Image 1: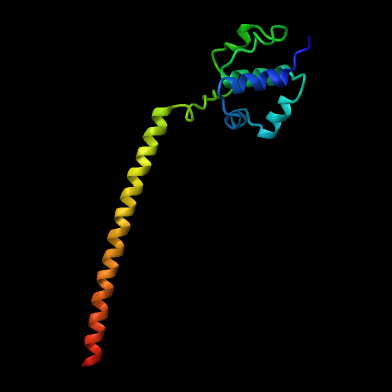
Image 2: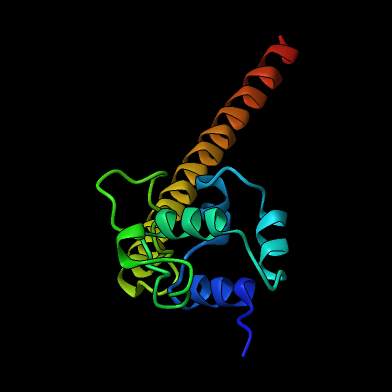
Length: 136
């Protein structure tokens, strides 16, 4: 059975929750190139190696004919490692930012009310002053 390199890479990226946008930035290619690679049945060895090192993922299991485990375990990575995109699934983080947003919004509304009430008071006092002057 022939392996579809692009599909295997894409499945691995998505299954492990990596951001395609972050990965493309890390390896200095545009997202369109990433999607083009996903559609390719065969990819060059250096492309797979670069993606694997950026993700800190060992593709030697998926492609034993191309790589050994040592290929992905070097002491100095070629590119910075892409972090998993856990923001969506991290319920505590979502709750924290939701609460923070509500606090900021409430404070903003309080300040707006203060500003509007001070404008109203100033406006009323000016209109009284103007009326008084007009009678003099």
